[in-house]
Image (cartoon, rainbow, N blue to C red; front, side, top):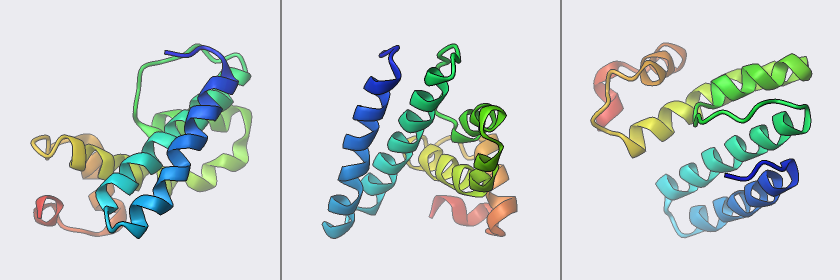
Length: 118
């Protein structure tokens, strides 16, 4: 796992460049995966540049809350990070319907739990 902010930013940019290509191909799930990965890596790069100790998490909400300590304006992306995290968990781990991220996403989006799996 890289420890230098520039490494995280470089890899994040590569993931982010894949998003429009996957959308053009009609692969929404893969586009969403690359979007989640890009945001995760951008946030980790930002945090590392501020002296943050690297943590193993894929939860954008956790990373965003940490980043908002340094840059409070980032809180405006809370809903986005919640929805992308929930979608990421649902796509990668469909068996974990009881995930806290999915429950939170359902409350925010207004979608009933039954619609999460299909």
